Image 1: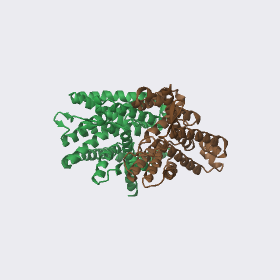
Image 2: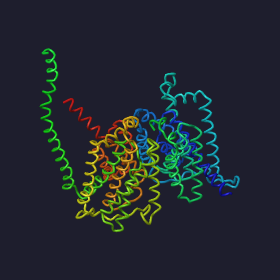
Image 3: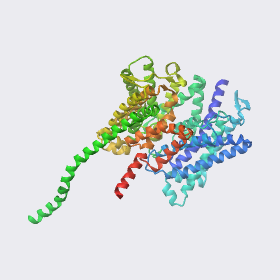
Length: 290
Length: 342
């Protein structure tokens, strides 16, 4: 029983990380109708930058702020420099362009830092306590709490504020939104910047558990996309719950079949889900460019 | 009567007058063009064979092998519009099939038949469940297939050599031994030319036109009675068989295969190659293959090997944004502008 609790706790924590990252993907997708393969790399930039500045004596807290700022600027810049220039009638071009940015950002960071793996500060991952028979680290608890607060906050902003109304108006029809005086471009770039911050938070949390290199966020991003595909990118709660569910499923697969089972379990899931779900769930009508 | 017939004659005359010399010139021009293409092709084949040092000849063989894979992606992505991140997986299936059979002493013909059979099966396994998908979903599922394949390779080390990779016996067909650079070049080039001819011929077939229609508008394709599912399956199978044969040749020429040669990044680089060269152009597929094989060597020779990934990423984003038809398309439009101004 304790073992199952431990597995579930680990899965929920992992799922909350996926959900936090997916929140950024969802908001960007709904406002810009773009999926960015470079999104994980934006988070990687935050973590690797933070690690690099700690090596020259900068305190960890300040290093994290610097890393997060880098991610915010980078994701905003991606929108301004690349995404805005993609013609709306070029289906799939956003994927190709962001794949290029994915490679470019990784290569730039390898040049600026290096190609090796590095240990990131633990950020409470090594301080544990027992709750209901499961060992929970401070880092785990912080991730779950942050996910609950941020997701709830995002939902409140989207559903109860004028900013949320503007965002939903942009998501529904950018041209009409612009005609009512909403600065669609600024709103989109702001959304990308906020998503960059979310990617930075997740990347730092992941970095505190695994070694950091230029590609360590790739598998996280793929799983985030998988959760988005399963839950539906044009919704709010279903994909986020799917993200938490995916974390639990992955954790259960690893606990049942061993550490190597995580990868095939997740990838088999997406193949089966997208192959067998009713056709109306996989039509791309609302995801023209993606 | 006269008044009505005169204008008709007058209207009909110019096209007739213009058509006679045009019709007479056309076969002559066509013959000249064919001659130029044949001479150019022979020169392109002969120059590397006669002048390249062994190392560059060996690279040329790899370019030819990769060109078959990029031609396959040209069919699947460039012509049918299916964004697949499994092309390196298809290549890997061919490479490891060749390796396993070659290590058991099977003849090249048996290897080739098995490679084609395995590629057809793998292509069908990927194609059938993904027929309803497009865009990101298709990319994601094909990516998942690639990751599963890499996982299988790493976890079946007794058969595949696992993460350490495996040494492959050089491909030997008759007197052509791939351990000799000139023969490796010929072994890569001949199938690549055959693949090129097939893809060029595709433009003239109904299947090729169906692919273009599926790419441009599935709705229009459905309205005109194009069998979309059948067209997509054929496209996937062609891409898979092309890549499988490319992987088999790559293994036999390179002498070594390992999982990183066929992982997600390898698939992304194949996409980079096709987009940079020109996703809808046969020549672009060759340019892309040359890019993928030669450029890393150039950067290594310059002492800056890490720049390859940087340049690759930047080029993919820039070319996709600024030159949707790739470098070949860019060159063609430049030549066209020059002719118009001349």
